[in-house]
Image (cartoon, rainbow, N blue to C red; front, side, top):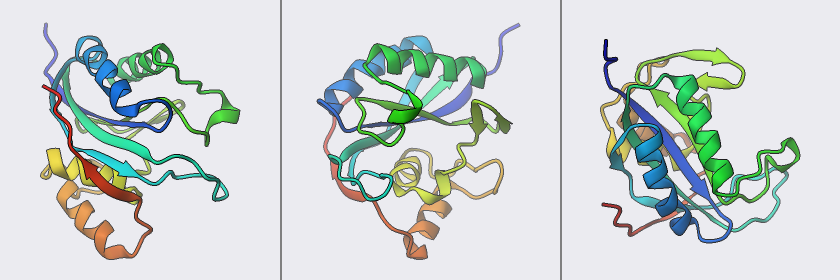
Length: 176
C-alpha cells in the first residue's frame, strides 16, 4: 500500500561560509532523501536572530516545499543527517551561534506533534517573518493546522503587528 504524498515545508537558513552554495548542495540531498522538491521560495537576506544582541553575519533564508511519503520523524532524521553532512554542529552550546546550515521542519501536511525532539507545526512560525513570508510566497493558501490561518493571513498579520522584522532584502536565485 502506498502512502499519500504530503506537503512537507522545510526552512533553510545559513550565515557561515557561502550559504547560497550550501543551499545548492542541500537541494539534491533533500530531493533524493526526503521526496520531490516542488517549490522553493525566493532567498531572503535577514538579520540574525541572536541571544543577547550578539553580532553575527546576516542569514540567507528560504522555504522549500517537498512532496513526501515519509512521516515527520523520518524527515527530521534525514534533515539532521543532511545538516551534519554539510558541516552543522548542533551541540547545545552552539544553538545561538552562526551556522553553515539550519534545516527546520515546519509542517508535514496537517500533522500535529509535540514530543521531543519534534514539534509540528514548528512553534515559532507565526513570529518569524523570515519563515512566514517565504511560506506565503510559495503556499499562500496553506492552512496552519493548529491556528487555522493561511500563510497569507499570517504574513499580513505579522506585517501589521509591529513585531520586529528581520528581512533585509530578497535575493535573486535560480534553482531548477
